[in-house]
Image (cartoon, rainbow, N blue to C red):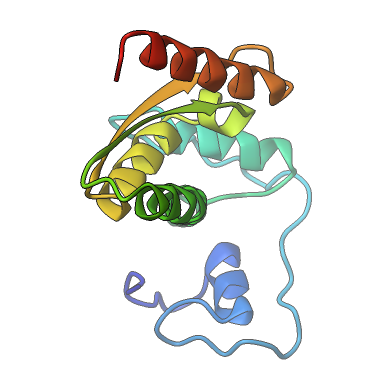
Length: 174
């Protein structure tokens, strides 16, 4: 991942990312950089953005007592996007492994399967669901997968949704 060009003086977020070993000029380690605490001497205005993402990030960081710049907000957004994308891909890899093994054991060229899904990240994250679905489908090219979201929040609902879908498919002769 290429980061934006290094400014003359690091913002706190850039200093922390460099300390953590992220970016082109990462140092990974050493003394942990200081992060400014408390309200700024002169409050900076919230950054302008076409989407509300940067402003929302700005407000969250201000609530934490930080003084984020527009660059800081962009870095936090990119870091969160990277983490959530990786999470979707990791979940997809696990599920795809199970689905591919099922297809191989059944000796089917194309397997149709219904997957019950539950979890607050799946339900509430703005792009996790789409990234997860796309990754699973990319990793299971010989499968037709239907995802059904459970609403009970316990995990049992996802299993019940899958069982009902399976029973319905059997009744329809699929």
